[in-house]
Length: 108
Image (cartoon, rainbow, N blue to C red; front, top):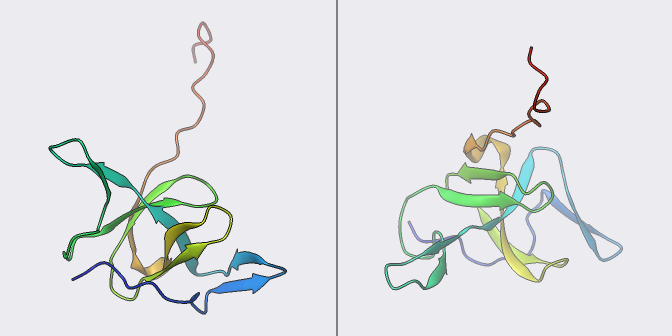
């Protein structure tokens, strides 16, 4: 499957006073960049494939992976970058958030 086409905003994204707001049940992320053998950076999912989309949440920076079916691509106004909106039901994995380790010298 090809990367999602660029569209206007999906129903789960609301434009209010020139800002986008992500509605519950949706997640928005920009594509992670991957390097090729030649060292060029290319957005993940830019080639035709059915692989999961590797995304970075626009709000939290947390990485997550989603199936590309039904994904929406559009420009995010804050960064002017192409982002992908997916329903939370399309998310197949998320990066675990790491809590701050205890201070050195304090053992439990």
